Image 1 (cartoon, helix red, strand yellow):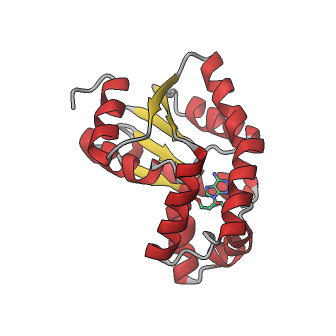
Image 2 (cartoon, rainbow, N blue to C red):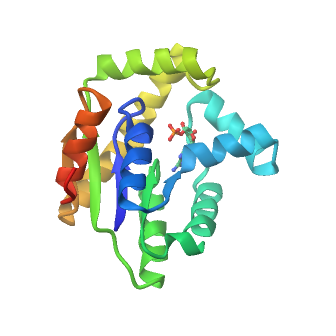
Length: 189
Ligand code: AMP
């Protein structure tokens, strides 16, 4: 199964994506996690990405697209994948379309996790404290939410027009939300 998970920062995408991908036996591909791994290892990609991440801005499309292209070409993505945090811009949607078309495959579903904005900010502040993420100060959180609203929220309409979006209420405890997501993609919890 080839899935995307979308929703504002702090909606619980990463947490849900990890559980769902494991349940479905497909790789969980989080562009944020890949960037963070590169930042901790001090790779050239990490050094480049960190400047943008720390400001709450998106890493340039060229860098991000190349990274996803490499990852999706790996053998474990053959049976499917769950992409978390990509695509985030109109250009990335076009790039992903091209990558999938070149492999003769297509997306099965786009999961949209919905949450209250107040709850999202609270979650992000708590996660910043728990994980020490340098992109989770209050100003940066606000900027990330703005960038999401400007650049990424409109992508949901693009996938809606293709009939792919399943909207899932992301409020509640983790297991409850997981069951809703699994039901929405047609898998028994
Ligand atoms: P995330 O963990 O998904 O919230 O991503 C953390 C940060 O990584 C984002 O705020 C961006 O700076 C960067 N990032 C992750 N995915 C992308 C993407 N698809 N395009 C551009 N930047 C990204």
